[in-house]
Length: 145
Image (tube, rainbow, N blue to C red; front, side, top):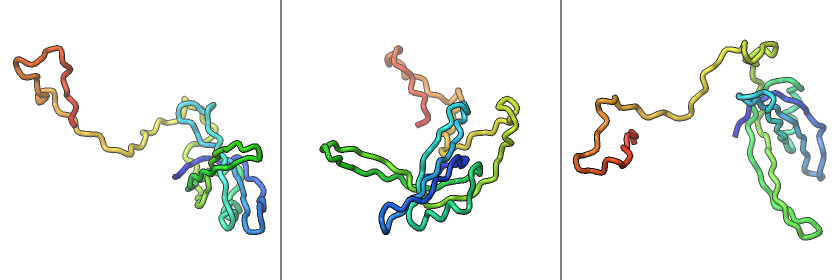
């Protein structure tokens, strides 16, 4: 998976065991509809990947590739919990595309990228009409697929 956002915080390296270390960071991901609702995503790097964060600083815009990991954990009281971690394995610098001094009304509107291809539309003259004698109150299926 992939996220693009601004680094808000880079935490210190934590040595959990003799062979396992973790370094967490917080990424602010912009909400396209309302910047007051931006997401603040906690990601982590582990072991050798902890050094990836050494090349970046707070405020820098980055593209992060990560895996989602889920674990079951049972407490001493027998209660089982499931928790998730976002484990980053690649971090790349991204040039800021929008100046931070512009207001939302002043920013140019960019077309949203499409990850799918829409089906071609038939002209109205080619849409088939219901056959004579068929139910007239039935909905007309004019979808191209």
